[in-house]
Image 1 (cartoon, rainbow, N blue to C red):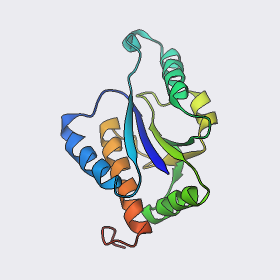
Image 2 (tube, rainbow, N blue to C red):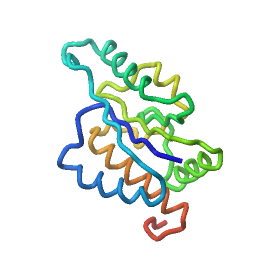
Image 3 (spheres, helix red, strand yellow):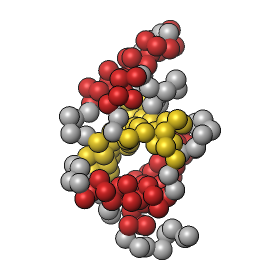
Image 4 (cartoon, rainbow, N blue to C red):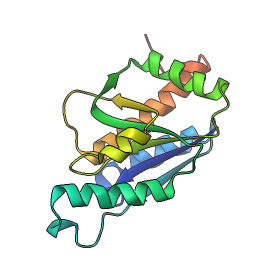
Length: 157
């Protein structure tokens, strides 16, 4: 199984880039992991919210493979503990999923077509969080999930 961590927006902010790099490197010990930064359209500041979300959705859908498992991060999704998230990842591996795409949408969320395409919608918090911090938290939680599955000492209950 492979992980593709996808995020609409700018490249990693220097404030969190080192942490993202660290956890992404650690993840490589368990699963091949890459980042896909989806650049918003050039005229994003001048587009109405609905058109912007549709343009972002088109870019996202163009980059997905038909058999990708799309795990959408959205504050309206289901909240899981770290252990439950690890079990979810384990189930995907058992089911033979080839690639899991964890998607962080744009500033206004994602278009309905992405919600419909998503296999699962996960919430890190009912609070809205800055995208750069979400990137760091997602990388860390995915790493934590891998250590939980291997009974390694990183996660303390």
